[in-house]
Image (cartoon, rainbow, N blue to C red; front, top):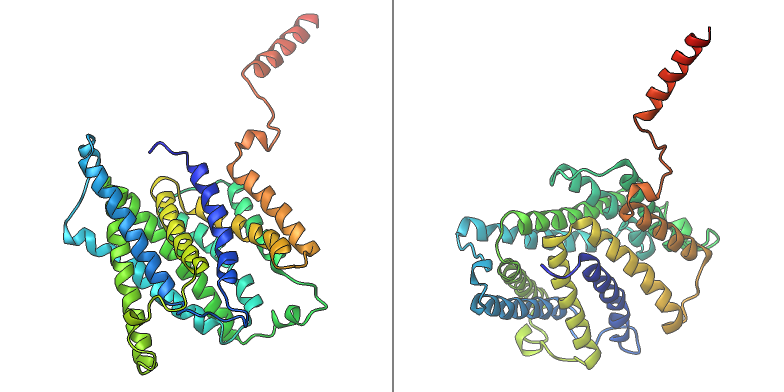
Length: 340
């Protein structure tokens, strides 16, 4: 493996935090997009597919050919279609949720995926978490939510509790699907010793196919009024748009690395810290006004990060017990009897 997981997690945090900033910068002056935003995930999948193919080719031609284990059994390959299906359903649930709740409420409910990921992590992957780690995950959810809550004198605060029940149910379903996709991907990555790049190749092949299906479906839905998608795929693209594609593709590659060599909890912490980093960067880039809640959320998330990853003995002052104590007590009793 070679590379420490925390270095990859840090790089993922930086790339994820810049993702929202680059997407905002790629907007037109009117706030819309001059390009078809549905083409961005497709091109990102193709980028990941090409990079994985090149690394797999290099790995199979190297002297360590034995390390490039490849399973070509269709029964194994077909399992990689499932994450694409889950993400497809998740994307549709996201749009359905936003028809019932506003953006602020949706972002806050999105923090449920922190908890649902931990629960599925325990149930499906059979990974045990200590009580301290469960508390840390709870704190992370509280911290990210706190950073997003606005002042209660604002209208957005009132809208948090006035959405229809369908909105809350769809929000919970969206969080569960997001967690399920991540947990299942980790299961696939760790179920055998196949090369990471071969696993990526399978994953992103299906991802590309499903994105093409979405583009074709959009063409039929709009009646081909702008022509077929492949004729306008690069229309409106700028340097910033290409940076969004590269960022999205690189982020996906880092996530798959973490799924193989770390776990979903590391990914959750990386994306949560990236969200806070984005909000801080927005203060300087987009004149975003910081709130007390933002700083409280950052402090809580840092506490959570330390609680989860630090050794327990550095967090709690444990009483040092050893076998000398009982012997000392016996000696005292014998001495008392001797004196009497």
